[in-house]
Image (cartoon, rainbow, N blue to C red; front, side):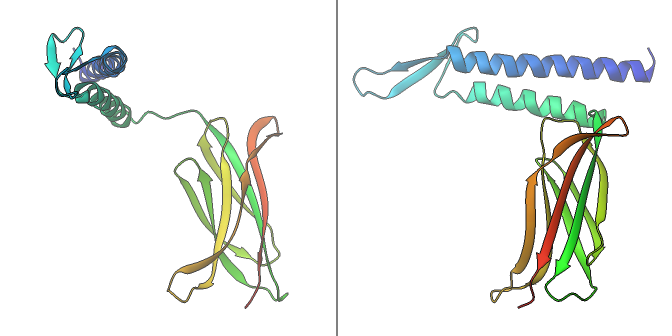
Length: 186
């Protein structure tokens, strides 16, 4: 058996074990029976059908779910599983209260995900951020730039956020977001 095939077999077996662990954990949580001591009113034990064991808590079910989820995530990371992507084009224009030309470090976050971009934007000139994101139902997009420092040392931001819109650009479904950040000098 070659190494690639062995690796795939191990991954498939691991995912099957993960699915069984998660399913078993959920079933265990749904089917467990709590036995209360009549004299003290305290939980005496929890019976989980199929285990033929009595435990003091429902931790085995929760633990089975966690082990299954960790195992599945580990296999996906090991095989570097990639999800289908689609383009996102986010455009920002920075305006300063004083009309002079300046540069601003602008950050783009795409939520809920792991996407963050940084760009240097010149006042009054639209700047496009183009990135490829996991294909999903919806993303919120936010632009922000640091405009100063608070008295306690924390940073002051100007931020604009909102939902991404979907449009066809040159026949390709694309996420689109446009924003304007206005920086007022204090």
